[in-house]
Every structure is written in structure tokens, then in C-alpha cells.
Length: 234
Image (cartoon, rainbow, N blue to C red; front, side, top):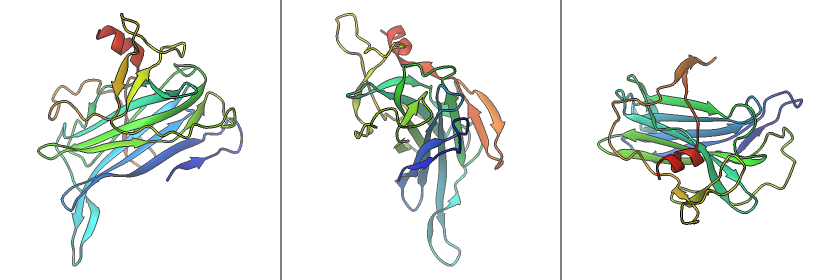
């Protein structure tokens, strides 16, 4: 289910998010929440990942007990997708981020400062969340659509197509154009892949941690233009 909160005025915050379990067993539940909002105007993304397990004090309550994991055993990543009028493309993304201490929850946020990086239009957060339990378990969560930088959510009809894990999608540059390789073919990436290896000890892009009003720790991490990442890697 998608949730939309509208502010009372254009200056007030509104956001779109979805949440739910992306993996669920008696031993391990991975819950994820993905959000897209206008933030400072250019766009704000957030992904919450939590690890829980069964609670059984006189009864069985799946996913009810915090399942603390050591450092580097919870992984999260943000991909920001933009709609070009006919398909979803990856616009920007973060590196994989891992918990830096024993905890049951990892929350990351990132933002496009100024204007949206791939032009005015519909955007969404594809959140990735995984927990290590001798292998990575988890998945992806789509936030829903948000028009950026317009505050009214009424500029054009919202796309009905929902991107899913495993989709192969193109990449947009800062002008909103499709990125092509040296042979003139579209550059593509696969949405929703898990971390390529086990728990990371480098904690790349550890970011800056801050404490939210509810006491949870949120890590703000750098967001990169995907077109620059794929160009540098080719």
C-alpha cells in the first residue's frame, strides 16, 4: 500500500512511501521502507531496513522481536529512478551502506541538492535492504511516484508501470537523455541485485550519522549520478 501525506501549503512537506517485509521466516524477517519526497526541492530518498525474528513468550509472534546483527551484517542501498514519459530509468544511486555497529536497524537517506538531477518529472526510490544470515536475505521496495520539483503532484498523469527487482532499465544523464555506450547502444543496469559479496568490512561511504526525533540513527550518504558511474566504469 502506498501512503501519501500532503502538506497544508506548498512549503509544507509531503512524501510518498511504501513498506513491508521483503523476506519473512520464523528465524529471520527483513522489513523495508522506501520513501521519496521533495526534501529541499530537488528530491529526498530514504530507506529503512530492519532485522527481526520470532517472539514466543507463551505464544508465537513472527517478526516481533529485534534481531540484532553485528557490524556489516545489514546492507542498504538507494536507487533513484526517473520516468522519461515511456519508461523508468535509473538517475542516481548510492553505494552499498552497512551497519557500523551491532544493531537491528539501518536507516539511510540521500538527496539531490538543487533541482532534480535528471530534469523535471516523476521520480521514485527503489530501496534495497538485506540482512546477512550465512547469505544475504532481503529484497527491494518501490516507494511510489513523486513529481519533482513541482509541489502539487498534479503536473502530469502519473505512470502506472511499477519497476520491479530484476528489471533491466536504461540510464539518464543530467539533461534527461538516455546514456549510450561507445557503439551507440543504450547503457543498462539491473534493478534489485543483492550485494555481490558477504559482509563488507570497508564500510565505504559511511556518511554522516544523525539522530531523528524518535531516537533512531539515520545515516546521510552521498548520492551519485548513475550516468557518471557507468561512464567511469566503461
